[in-house]
Image 1 (cartoon, rainbow, N blue to C red):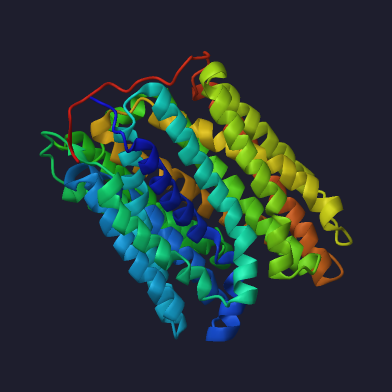
Image 2 (cartoon, helix red, strand yellow):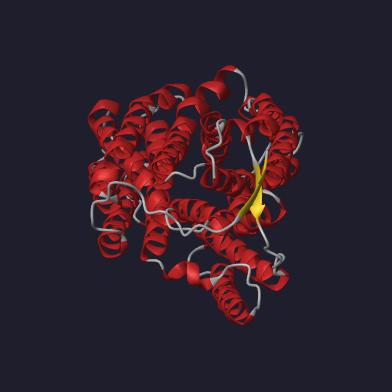
Length: 475
C-alpha cells in the first residue's frame, strides 16, 4: 500500500489526542481540594472525581477498541472526540458533586473510545515498519509526557483560573480534533470481518474490568479485606473466567485468545500495567508529600514537576533513537532500573526535608526511566499485531496502563495508611509515604523480571512487522 502522504500530520493530531486523554486522567489530582471547597464535596466524593474517570476508562477500553475495528476507526475516534467535548463542558459547568462525578464518568467513556481508535489509526496508517516504530515511540512519549504535564499545569490553572478551567481547556482542543480528523485521518476497518461485537464476550469482559477497577479504587477506603473489596475482586475473577470460556467457544470471539500467545504482547502489557502503577503511585505520593508535608501550594509544587517532565521527554526521545539497535528488552530494563532507583530515593523522604534535598534528584532519575520504558513496552505489545486487530490490541495496551494506575494509587494509599506512625500528623504521613514509595520499588523490580523473561532479547534493526492482513481504507 502506498504510504499516506498525510501520515505525519495525522500523527501530530493523534498525539494531541493522546496527550489530553492522559492529562485528564491525572490533572484533577491537584484541583481536588478546590473542588471540595467550592462544591461542598465529601472526601469519598472527591475521590470519585478521579476514580469515576478511571473506572469507565479502564472498563470500556477493550469494547472501544473492538468497535473501532468493526465500525471504522476514524468514525469511532470522531464520535469519542465529540463526547469528550460535551463531557468536558459538563464537568466545568458542574453545579453539584453528583453532576461532576457523572460527567467525569462520561468523560472516561469518551477516552475509552478515543484512545484505542487513535492508536489503531496510527498502526494502520504507518505501513513501513521503521516508520511505525518511530510513530509508536512518539505516541508513547506523548502519553508519558501527558502524565507528567498534568501535575505541572493542574496547579497553576486551578489557582489562577479556577478548577473548572482544567476541563474547559479541553473544549477548543476537542473541537479542533473533530474538525481536522476528516482532513488528516484515513478511514479504515478490518475488511471482511463480520464477527460483530460478540455481545456476551463484550458484557462479561467489560463487567470484569469495571469490577476489578472498582475493587482497587475502593480498597484504600474500605480496606483490602472488607466484604465489598473481596466481593468485587471475586466477581472480577469469576467474570474473567466466564469470559475465557465464552471466547474459547465463540465462533467469532471479541478477543481472539491467540493474541496472548506472543511473548512480546503479554510481556509488553504486563510491563505497561506495572509502569502505570509506578507512575500513578509516585505522582500521588510526591504530591501529598510536597503539599501536606513541605507546605507547597498547588502552583509551586506543580512547577516542581517541571524537571521530571523535561527529562521524561528526553528519555522518550533517547529510547526512540536506540530501540531499533538494542531491542525493546534493553530499553525497558534500563528504564525500569531508573524508575526503581528514583522510587528508592523517595523512600528516604523526611518530615524536615526540602524539595531539593528529598524530591528533585529522585524525580529527575524517575522521569527518563518512565519515558523510556513507556516507549519500549508499547512497541513490544503492539509490534506484531495484525492490522485487523490493532484496535483491540490498542485497547488492551491502554487498559493495562490505566488499570495499573488505579492499582498503584490504591496500593500506595493503603501502604501509606498502614505504615503511618509518628508524634505529629506530618511525621505520620511522611513515614507512611516512605513505605508507599517502597511499594513502587517492588512494582519496578517485578517489571524488570517480566521484561527480562518475556521481552525480545535480540537487537533488531527495526521493529517486527505484523503479519499483513487486508484492511479496507478510504480517504
